[in-house]
Figure 1 (cartoon, one colour):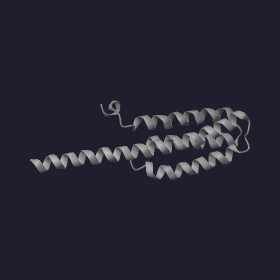
Figure 2: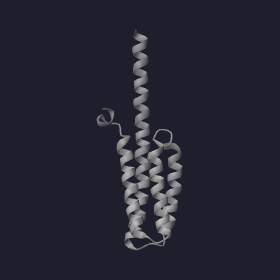
Figure 3: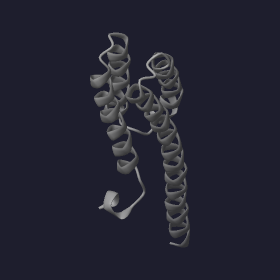
Length: 127
């Protein structure tokens, strides 16, 4: 009986520790991508449209690196939504539809924030 209790406690501790590690990585990486997308958005709004294409491409490359790790424990649909909106933003920038690009960036940031909230270790997500 004592062995089972110790094993159960160890398993619960491992789960909690791994959840904390994945949550920290998710928050850090999603915040990093969100900041870069906000930089692109600020450039679009301020009229600095020359650098926006390079910035969105760099952000997408950064996202691809981050996504390789996130795909292990986050639903693929959520990650595909972010990638889809980044591709849409890049396309809208290429055809100089800057207003629509800003809207797509806002949607992308909303999804990123949703992912952060969804995978947060809290009571509301447990129950």
